[in-house]
Amino acid sequence: MNASSHPRPARLTVGVVGAGRVGPALAASLRLAGHRPVAVSGVSDASRRRAAELLPDVPLVPPAQVLERADLVLLTVPDDALPGLVQGLADTGAVRPGQLLVHTSGRYGTSVLDPARRAGALPLALHPAMTFTGTSVDVQRLAGCSFGVTAPDELRLAAEALVIEMGGEPEWIEEAARPLYHAALALGANHLVTLVAQSMELLRQAGVAAPDRMLGPLLGAALDNALRSGDAALTGPVARGDAGTVAAHVAELRKHAPATVAGYLAMARTTADRALAHGVLKPELAEDLLGVLADGSTGADGSTGAEGDSGR
Image (cartoon, rainbow, N blue to C red):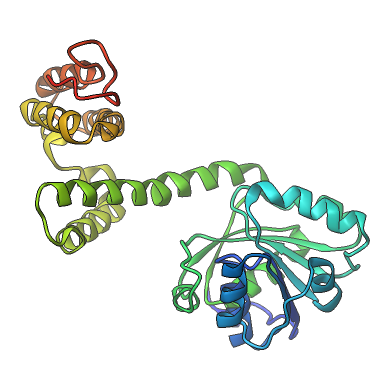
């Protein structure tokens, strides 16, 4: 999909409510497309610094004043804060008829904006499927980034055009599918960060001086293979059915990093199930492996794998 297939939105004044990591980056991207950021709200020192870096000379004002000044308002607050924010803005009369109100939550579609829609706002849900750093790097990363888009039919083209202007790729998500869509992204991206951080900690314990340098090529190749081939890319001792190796892993983790045992076992069981279902793991090797994974959930004294150094 390219920009030429969509009408370009009129040049808009842009406001940001919630100067976390996402809002200032999106507003800065919209400015590159010719729109004009005019106001931003932020409370913490970190929010103010981000706004100053990414949106220099744009005044910091209360949320109601952001809505007063902007044609397009980005609501970039945490998911749990969004319903209350929208209701409060509607109740205080801050919402103007014909104003584009955009939230960036993955969890919600446009129904969370219903109080503002009843006040005449035009609701859009534009969720960038990317992790943000809160720096100018994010603006560059938006190029080619997929956005989960939900909007009323009459606003669909406008929503997609805004995404394209930010350098992104619109992906239409039905209202009812938003929670599942967001769960899928969290499962892949958020949990990946946890796994990588744990892996680096364990490598440091094992004496590796530069775990990031060691993991970089390995994880890059694994990610590329997984995106290309799905379950066919599974490898390692679980997929091979190396029960003895997996048992040794569990014993070492229980000794040196007991807090990681539960996660290792859960991921290993899931990997084994998928490898078996897709013909990667040979059935004759699965029984011993699954036995190790079942036994590994408790220590020799009956304690769970996440507690103490029970050993094996």
